Image (cartoon, rainbow, N blue to C red; front, top):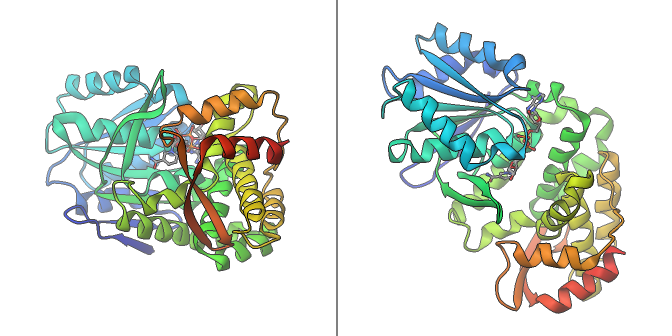
Length: 357
Ligand SMILES: NC(=O)c1ccc[n+]([C@@H]2O[C@H](COP(=O)([O-])OP(=O)(O)OC[C@H]3O[C@@H](n4cnc5c(N)ncnc54)[C@H](O)[C@@H]3O)[C@@H](O)[C@H]2O)c1
């Protein structure tokens, strides 16, 4: 079993990565939760039939009683309504301060169940069991939990660290190709911002990545954990994790309903930021081409027909990462080295429209 230790002050925990480890969750939970704790498993309708029994059986074999709440899959579940229903389920079933939540699923389950854990009795224990690639390499690490509001994504939430994160890379086998590509956009991002070696591995092994997944997940979690340690509350360095995301989120917001996925949005965002960096003379020439080609190997397009640049500009203005007339953006000096730069928002949007079209 590979282990990434996250030594956050007063809240340290381990990320355990091992094929087949879902079957050991009982013993792992017993070692990190309070004695006699019951567990509320929060999952969704896709993940429950695949992995619900394995988790319940393992918990039960370790003497841990569990109850299960199953959410509808999709972003609409990251809502006040879902949160309220988790609270009702928890209190109807007499959950106590000594009990815990296990978030079994993708980033959506992780975010909403984690926020429920952060707020029930002002915080009960929780264990993240991410089952999508995106959740395994990104959302389950770092302690950000949140729900969406009508004003935007992730606007209400908390920084709340789990007791441990248990990653079973075998669960990736049942993901749809689209969600696998979504996760790969984040994996490529880690290579872009922090590790040329990881980027090269992705570039050279697209045909047999499955065998390398465990190692790749560990590398991504380590990179994210290192960044989070420097900047747990997201006030500086952590921004490098958003490479490609300002544009990506705006694209997703503007065109998500027309089928543009998170991963494609982020990939286009990374390609555009690399082109922008090259235009400014900050990014090594040829970097954008490398990212474009790497993304193509994992089903990530670098193009999308932008019908109305204003829609995108509006989406970016509303992004919670924007402020006043200036915007912080993440650029690459080269693959493996990201920097943060402040630029004028209006100029940036003007340049973007040229680079995107
Ligand atoms: N908290 C953070 O730091 C952070 C970081 C990045 C993203 N996020 C959030 O994560 C969410 C996206 O996460 P996601 O891409 O995992 O989406 P998701 O939770 O919707 O999961 C993707 C889809 O795959 C299904 N699924 C999950 N695991 C599966 C498996 N093993 N086999 C088959 N199907 C499976 C889910 O039911 C869902 O339909 C967004 O809401 C985003 O805001 C949070």
